[in-house]
Image 1 (cartoon, rainbow, N blue to C red):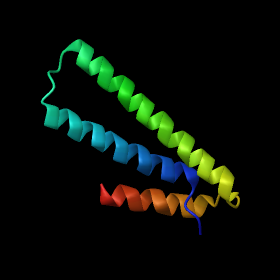
Image 2 (cartoon, helix red, strand yellow; image 1 turned 180 degrees about the vertical axis):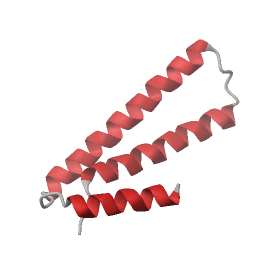
Image 3 (cartoon, one colour; image 1 turned 45 degrees about the vertical axis):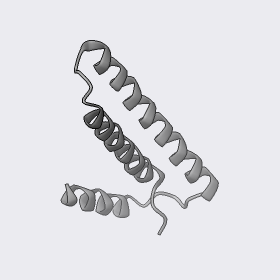
Length: 82
């Protein structure tokens, strides 16, 4: 069964957010208001791009109608790994 596009989006966004966090840690950036605002803009941008990529993949693959039971199982599996 194909992975739902929203789950792909979550995974992509999560990976990008981790990359941003790691980059900020490596840079040792000060936590002033401007830095925090810039980080917030980058996070929002990363999430927006991830969602657009996932929607594009979903539209391109013409996924079958959503299966709520499978979606709940995947959400539960993700929650168990956290």
